[in-house]
Every structure is written in structure tokens, then in C-alpha cells.
Length: 379
Image 1 (cartoon, rainbow, N blue to C red):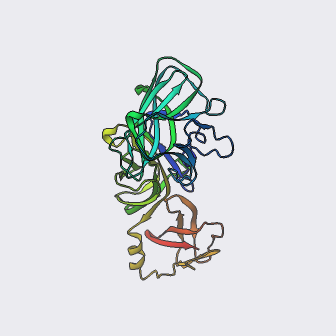
Image 2: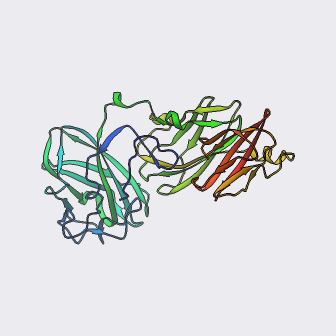
């Protein structure tokens, strides 16, 4: 099981953002025990049929190495069981109600196992995962519903393969989760986050490339999300369909604004309606960059200014300006956030960049009504 960090807020420049579906509550089960990551003498599980069930360390979902293995060389003639403890963090205390149960399942190519049963004791309420038609030789997210007519105190979970399911072959089980179902009235139509006022986006009119990295969890059914710049309003659509899950994938988009954006809000939005890309699960965003596509041609076509208007370039300590007249200089990071501003720069102006992180910094120089866009590289 892969441990995750849930980030509240918008840590856009250096952080990693997690966006989750809003139609279920937090996971009730302990992620370590029900992800089979607890090692040692007490794993929290007792195998009633150790010849069939065991915790292994050579296969796991979502980048982990542990899971619960089931195996049988023939069609079973009796139910096979693995019991969770009620003496540890695995103890189950649930109120009356309806829950969603999820798990990751891996079936061998020749497996003949049509169902996997989860039994919640001591009420012995069943939640059955339908495995018929499931893709083989890969981790697949499965889901079912658990309905409790009364509360459970100090309960535990029984993982069971019934004789009616066939039971022949090899199967791995990981990341068993239980979620409360939220009242539909509590689910917002759109979930979104945005930059704080101090970190708005400042861009000149023009065409830009926006790039980012996205990680989609294996169990995620979310199909898309949007990014926005609010003034002037421009939306970018990001399609998650067909992306490789369980790894970082780089995506690019392009947008054009006809007027400048002055400290405009940057927003990321997910529509929770499945008809408009919503679903369940989580995805992560990192390394969001906005780069001008036209600034390089502007820079190269101003031969009267020369390529040494900002020098040295690349730089790592100090930067100088080849200016004939007073000018304003604005330095942006890759997202368009202002990182340094000089109102009256001239040929004697020195910019200390020793504290800048490595990367590309667009520089806007305005002098006598002319605007020059340069690309400063910090190495």
C-alpha cells in the first residue's frame, strides 16, 4: 500500500496537490493493517487456512510490496478464510448505516475465482466483490456496498473465498478500505482550490504553454479536471482518460489571453457529477509551469537591443542589464508569480540571484513604452 500525504490548501509552487472525489467519507480502516504492511510476529491477521492464505512481500498495489495472497491448485470443496484481529488497530466500531467497501485485487491468468467475500463480525454481515470478468495479471480496483442494520462494537473482518466462487488459482488482495457514504446534499457540485491573493498569476497578453505532472491512483474513476485563470477568464481542460495509472505522467496544454493578467487567481477545479468528469478516488498534481510561447520570438527579433540585454545568462550569482535608458524590470517565476521588481533600472543596476532556485525566469523590461521579454536561466 502506498502511503499518501493529504494536503489542505494550495501549495502550488513546490508542493504536491491531491484532489479527491467528494462522494465518500474518509477511510475507516487502518491503512497499515488492512494494507498488509504490518510485519513481525503480529501482522493482525490469523490464517485459518494457511495453505491458502498468506501475507507476502513480493507483490503489492500502488507501489507497495505487501499484500494478502490466496492460492489453490484446484476447485475448493470448503470455504477458505483469513481472519482480521479485533485486539489491535484493526478493531471495527461502526454505526448503523450504509458503507462503501473497496479493495485492490490481482488475479492470475488461469484463476477461476468469481467472487471475494468480506464478512463483518460479530454480525456476520457480508459484502461481496464480484470478480467475474475482471482483467487478469494486473491490479484492479473493486467496490461493493456494506449495509448494517445495527451498530458493531469491537468487531473484525473475515476475508473468505466461498466454494460457490470456484476458488482455483492465484489471487492477491490489498488496500481494503471502508468509507461512509455522505448525504448527497453534502456533496458540492464542484470541488476547487485556488491561489491566495499574494500568489496570483501575472502575465502579458499572448500565447502560453501550461504544463504539469499528474499521478492517478489505480482505483480512481475521475475522468477530468480544469485549470483556470480568472481575470481574464481562461479555462484549460485536462483529460485523465487513458492515462497510465500509478505513475507520474507529464501533460501540456496551451492557452491565449488577449489582455494582461494582473495578479489573477489561478484555480483548479473538479466537477463531482460523473456526467461531467466526476468520480471516486484521488489524483495528484505537481510541477505546474506556465511558459510564454511568443516571448522567444519577440526576444530574438529585437536585434537593436541585442541578446545581452540581461547578462550573464545563464547566471547563478549576479545579473546585469544593458540599458540605454531608465526601465522597469519585473522577474517572474515559471508560474507567472512576481519574484523581483525594479522600478528604475539602468546600466548600473545589479540583480542578486544567488537565492533564486534553478530554473527559467521570464523577465519583462519596459523602457520608453517598449516592452521586451527575456528568458533568464538560473543554473
